[in-house]
Image (cartoon, rainbow, N blue to C red; front, side, top):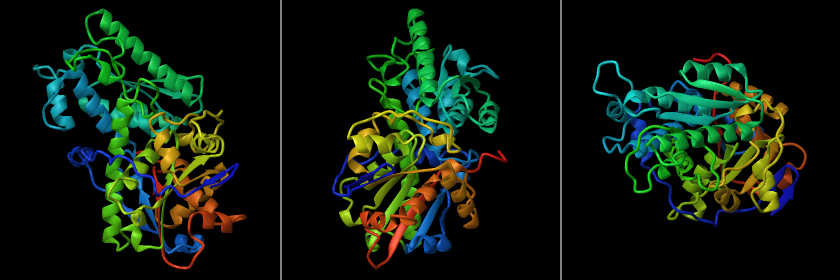
Length: 420
């Protein structure tokens, strides 16, 4: 194992975990506008990094939301609302909306199921994705954001029709506000004969699994003790992205990773849910060790909670500060992600705002539009594979010997400007 202030490395490919649930893929294919996002080969950037082949998964093309987050939010929103209301029809948003709506022209779901509302906290795209899910279901949404979130992020959430509240706190404080809102809603609903207290975690809305109505449904992409089910559905939604990558690499003659001397995937990390999905996908039983890529997590140096946790050997929180990588500005890893990251990540690195800005320009030269959070994955690759100390880090990643390598960089969101 190698560890310093901004770099952690070991080989975790011998560890395996339960195979991920792939049920969300069919649900996503039924969503309006679904198509696999591009996997762009970037030979010039590969040459700069000194690797064989570099591919960039461009999530700026995900639906019209310009980020991967809708894969998790839509699936978790569907599963949570279906569980809350007792829906057992087709696994589609359209089917659930029809079930929720009252049998009157122009009715909305809220009139049939009381105050049923989706609630979340966000520092970027997750809140917009939850608000979009709510809108497509005919439900209201309440979204909490920390201070310092860019105005364009707020505008995009407002455009989905959500009630947005800015909290004078960091991301963790916004999560606490959303949690308190949902728990208060659940308690009020219980007192009036609706969902039992604790219904903010949808699996606990009714102890016997019966349908209940009313109250807030918390759709949060981080977990804590007693709130694990909904975040696990969000992670399951991200499995679609990695299945797409596998198929696209195969089509490009670059799969399985075992066909290369070294395989590596770089994943931007906030609370770690996307990285958890990567670990679950590439550490599943039945996948040969030689076909398991190394997994590199990338965080802002102002919010490197996963790197700190790996260094400490235990889940840790860190103070955060303003960063251009606002979508990654999280101080505490998700409790359900941590065991996967602890045992399944191979390396972790922290990058600066300057690194992220330079990565945006580099990806643009390869035809990929990205914001600083989305470009963090490439910033991490560049920081790990070039510059002072690179020879040691390359050895840690198995990239010091001669031979081909296949690297995948997740570019998780488009730029903040020019919203569409």
